[in-house]
Length: 113
Image (tube, rainbow, N blue to C red; front, side, top):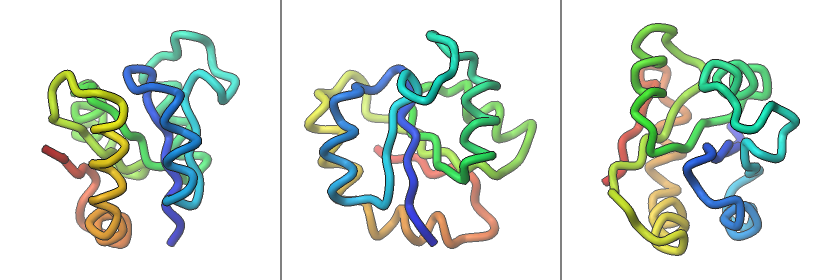
């Protein structure tokens, strides 16, 4: 299965070019044609239609996953206020765990700390 990441507005758009080197696809919510700022439900529906994983540090997506189930799957970053490079490195270092998460039929949210 492909790893296609959709970075939420609370993450830097600058990470897209770095993460594309390690994942099958990556884009930022500000660049997909939704209103800016996009509503969480719009992001959710887009990710679902495009078979993407939402990467965020916004717990609202955790609540949406609890209500709507999955897909889409959500990677919830619980790292506090960290630099863009720290977040990029975390996602790159966790690629094998992200792959297992994507392939798992029973989990819809992966929390990274």
